[in-house]
Length: 227
Image (cartoon, rainbow, N blue to C red; front, side, top):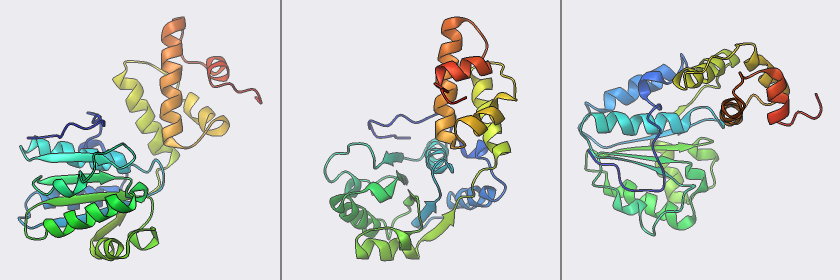
C-alpha cells in the first residue's frame, strides 16, 4: 500500500461506498470491475464543477489502497515536480484530477505515462470538466484519451446536495435545521463547493459563539447585505 508524498491530503470521507447518484452508481460498478482486470485500463471522468470528480478519484485511491495496491492521487492544480507524472507507471492505480489545467509539459508527461502502462496492469483514472474531445490538449494525448472509457457524472439534485451537507454535519456531530439548506440554495449558492465552505464557516462561528446555526447567523457570517 503506497500513497506518494504530495501536497494533497486525501479526504478519508471520500469513498466509493458513499458516492451519491443513481446514474453515478453505474460508474462505481464499472470501477469495481477493474480490480479484477489484469490489463491496463484508462478511464476519463468528466463533469461540471462540484459533480463529484475529486470524490470519485480519491475514492478509487482509497479502494486500491484498501486492497493493498499501490495508488496515487494527483491534483494537477497543485505544484508538482518536473517529470513527476511520467514516473508513476509503477503504481497499480494512478488517479489524476483536473487534467484541463495541465501545462503542455505535463500533458507530454501524461502521454508518456499512457504509453508506459500499455502492457502493465496499471489503472489510469483521469478527471476533466469536459469530454476529451472538447478539451484543449496536445493532439496525440487528446486522441488517446478520446479512445479511453469515458463517463460523465450526473448533476446532483438539491436533495442529493442536502444529503451530502447533512452527512458532513453528522460527522461533526452538529444538529442543524434542514430548512437552513433550501435557504442557502436560494440566497447564497447552489454550488456544492460553495455550500461546503459556507457550512465550515458557519460551524466555526457557531462554536466560537456557542450558538446554533440559524438564519440570522447565516446573514451575519456570510454577509447577506442584500437580504
